[in-house]
Length: 349
Image (cartoon, rainbow, N blue to C red; front, side):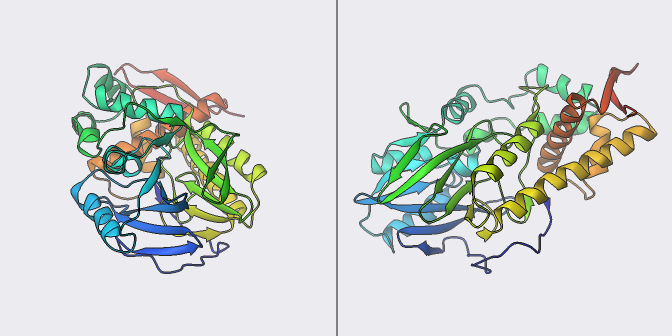
């Protein structure tokens, strides 16, 4: 995640909500902000008026503070209302965290894309950060120090602590199909890079784009490669997704993201995100032209602040996403050196 500003964007709600605040974006469309215990300290979720109740678009983290925030909503402004369905964009805990609790409390169905649902199930029963031997080897071979490797792989059952599970039955969201919620018709879009098959919704009649984490106003979503899929081209997938969204959606749509503020300027923001990643690739290429670098050694080349263990894991994963993309593009070559570490050099063009 990198913070940067874009003066071309227009913000109809310039003041950030406080956690627990609920406001109306459009008739029958509510915006709720929930707290997160991270540097990125919030997540936006949305409620869409549905037949006899409200459809929930993402849930927040699966912790007691978030559960209390939802209870306050259903005891206050939405007292007596029911949840008709829970729509989850992707498997990350700040989006799927309370899905199990909300679907059980309201006997409401869960809607997800197949990949995100199955990845949520996988994380519950075989989490990728349990520290199996293959995962520390993945980080060591790419130049991460032993100390940071142990921190990144030693988080144990973190996913289980941040989620309440998903029910054993779900309804699949499929790109290219439509979803009717109350009086609104939404086209279903999906995109990769940040998550495998993240769901987004677009209402053409009102030009409302529920963008999840794919297009954010003031930060770039994390696009990483993880030990589970070491050769993944996450950045290439993400960039192609951005290009597809730009071609399919109008620039004047109101973007309702799951972090930061709602904004106008979708095409400008997509252009800025693409340029941001191009600039990072240029920095990496310049560093690897002066001397071979491991992915771990490249982290400070594109992240210029001090990182804690949580941030370091994401920063390393994002650096590796750029490396894998550039190797596929023929801009970097990799060789295993005498110390067993993979290092990269720029290919002269």
